[in-house]
Length: 385
Image (cartoon, rainbow, N blue to C red; front, side, top):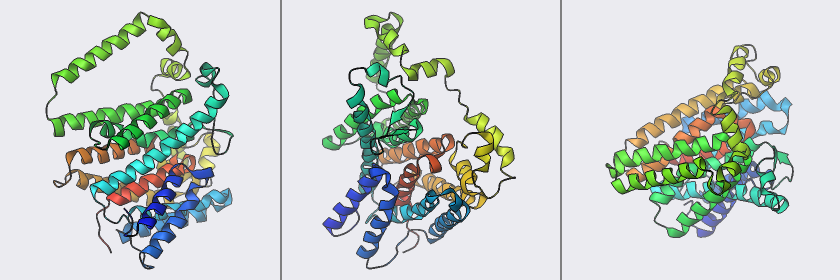
């Protein structure tokens, strides 16, 4: 994937896996090591696919640091963004197989962290699973302290975006079943976390992938799948309506279900944004002045960056986001790309984009943004050598 030398390949992949599981919560600090390895392996030459985009991301890093350094060491996290672009753009060959391997490596790594978090909690609550599914706070495996469930659930999104492809199109049985087992385990834990957004993203991913599959790959619906779906739906409805085996009572006690019953898909995010927007022109240079006045983080990627470090980094990230959108548009139209692989890439992009509109990713889960940029960079067309 990365080099003609196998030991370089193994080393980079191991380090990337360590980034994905956010090893000891220092995943970002592994990026400079990977960059150095690739730099040396390429005979001390910096290779980026698009020089203009790389410069914009470097400007993001510098301005993010300059306007947020008073807020602590986290200000240096901006430099991880161009590093991620450099790493993702240095796949030896950005063929479908290598990009797919990169997505799997990062998705499986993030899911493993969810499994570790789950196992850590199970070691305490295995005698009372109902408490685990209803308690308001959860613990991080590395820190052994309570963390926001938003941060934990971010590790679920990447795998959920490619689970349809894994089940439907992945030919390597070992990879397929590894992904499925990780998905089932992490879904179990996400129910305990009570995050509605996790299942909204999963639903959108499955719906998008199925629709794409139906329109561009199958091009017709096999009646037996419709029959299977109707049968499964009737079984579930019967279990709930008649409360067979006490299933309805048990499910209704889960915190996630109670949140859906009470609030549905309603979220306070739009109210927060409505309060934040008038303050944008007043606090152009960040400093978390907006969130301190509203009492909540701005719940989208660009607004979060604006609140943290001001207008310049936010504009840089907006330009990069539009660049990725353009890349995805051109990628979807490539005739040489297999339809199934296009479905995987577009499902990943759609779900990631939705998350960027729902969560304060930069300050809440920068690892997720770093991994997004790695994958996006691997898809970039080569413009500069």
